Picture 1 (cartoon, rainbow, N blue to C red):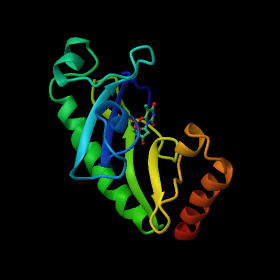
Picture 2: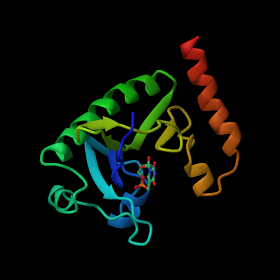
Picture 3: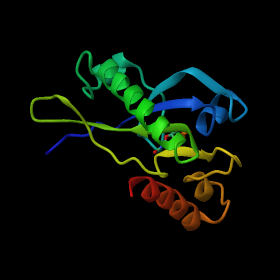
Length: 157
Ligand code: TMP
């Protein structure tokens, strides 16, 4: 389907990690219960700032009600994802998804789910199993992605 994708990222966090720790001076791995949802504007120059519902509407990125609708969908996606990943021995730390708007202006989930767009820590060892390996130059990037793919394939068999 043809979609217009506003430059917004809908993030759900189950544990502190990444930019949140830098922005708010927090240790990594502190649990959030209930999960912590954030919406950011994709803008590299401004450092992807947090954005409110009012500003999304003012900027014409979303219609009235769609901010809450999208956040509700992200939280529900996360519930499924978290359980599925736990069965692969992976703890979902956080993830982001994006939405498009179709010709009628309705919201449609429009993104990938992969170790590029979420943080996954191995349940037993705490090893980073996601793009942080690349971001932090931890090495074994390909091997780790392959390990995640293999665990997924084993479950899907
Ligand atoms: P952050 O800690 O950098 O804010 O990222 C939060 C989550 O969002 C993390 O799982 C990585 C994901 N993410 C993307 O997929 N694309 C992006 O451009 C950014 C900034 C984060």
